[in-house]
Length: 247
Image: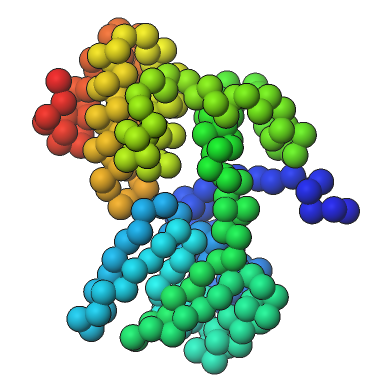
């Protein structure tokens, strides 16, 4: 069977908090590979870390965890981790670079594992969110046919109205939140869209992806009230996230 006929599933990083994943064990090679995919940086924004007075950068699809850190995560020996990474390098799955006290690990073709390819990212996440809001939707058949259906949707993100330069400043997670929130609230007023943009900008400043999950849950709760959900959402963001500058 060809790879492009296999389809895909969305595997959220929250699985790492599940009792099954946290169960103490020796990781298999397959589990170790999944762990790498979940642990490398998913944000498009470069991050910097200081190790022994040396600034080390980390880009999308990269990790700067040490051999010992991976060994502790997988309950392996250091030599086992090194042999495993050599195997993945030979298979063209990743590359490594020796740094001070650590290594830079880079997953090859990282975007293919995220099903993003930038243009399709919002469509994929919109579809997933619509499935959450409409439980009867059958979302098991996420294959290539569904991905290609309606390519124009990629250029019609719900609620998007601000300049592309502003969209770039939000980052991919900020853009997703803004577009999905506009659709959830059914925004028609420019003022409401501006407020959601400012909230997305604030969320994008955080390095913790959990803030987006929390903000999305708050947004859903506000919509369920049915009474001025935008105003309630702003109030909740002020109180729960300390965004005092919001109006």
